[in-house]
Length: 387
Image (cartoon, rainbow, N blue to C red; front, side):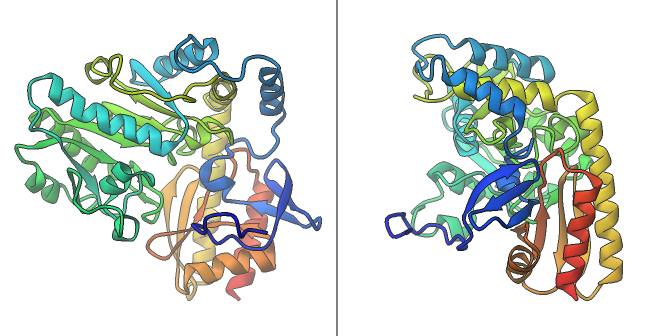
């Protein structure tokens, strides 16, 4: 049945036909506990009534206008994002990669407009992931993603994540900015040390570099705050957001301060579908729900519980499980066997969906509405496959 689909993925044979909360249901009726959330996308789980009702209502109105015309729901969402973050300007796209593309362009445009066109190089971090476009794989620099696609470095450099001395040494006369994930996902659920981030911020201020945080995965409530930078205490100039922002409906956003955003004028960037009425209607419901302090308190409580249970599990089965890392409901655990093997066993034997990550880790990205009973079931399944 998949012969006509380009073979970029290798999904298992299971076919999901419906979902409810933290669960997915296959065509044979089997129920699966979802601790992947479509890779941190389904922040409110599956078929959340608020989102379903909002999308149904929006579907009866205007689906698409293009950015030739005003979109009221988009203006509302942009205003809410600027009210609740450092940002003064927002550009809406359709994905995290597109949001990152906008941010990378804004970094270079800032220096160009200020008479410094020679400052175009952007420093990324080892182990990072920013998307699958030419620019975003260039920024990540991962050979497995760049092979066959990047004949040159496209103006990107990479340094080890967390190594401030290496970062200092890389900055040169052509450096324009720095992009990093406050919490690396694909790289193994690594949280940036706040002191490191403060040092990065200081370097940017000293050299007039633009600091961009990629919060596509770790942002929008998953860290326990609306965005991870708010917990870590360091403010970027640009922030990319997606995944949870739409709760399953495609949307991305590039947030900037006025210093950077004012240079992205007419003709510098665009998107046919970005900020469409359907996506931004859903985005407003997502933001209103996730930004509520009671909701974020629940995320932090469940994070503490999941981390505690994973830590205890690693003590009970140290020959299989090791260090627990991450923040909020973006947690990982090191595994001794190949992580793909455990991932398959969790799916096929326990009917629990988890995600692998770098550093031979398993990644846990449950819907933010997860409860203790569902976490207990996860721990039981992890212990069972280990034994």
